[in-house]
Length: 79
Image (cartoon, rainbow, N blue to C red):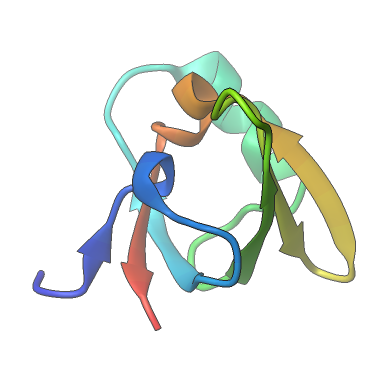
């Protein structure tokens, strides 16, 4: 997909839509789903820590902090 983006490379102000999850990491994938990060959900990066980890995203009217390694589980497309 041409618009595919890694959350690890997103900068504040960028938005994307979750398209799925990478294979493996089943346990953590379930936690992300429980937090509302389901396929089709739109989110935006609001802040990135000075050393680049973690990053803060705005999703479903709340903010969520994710480590870059955790964010790598998500597959998304740029909006």
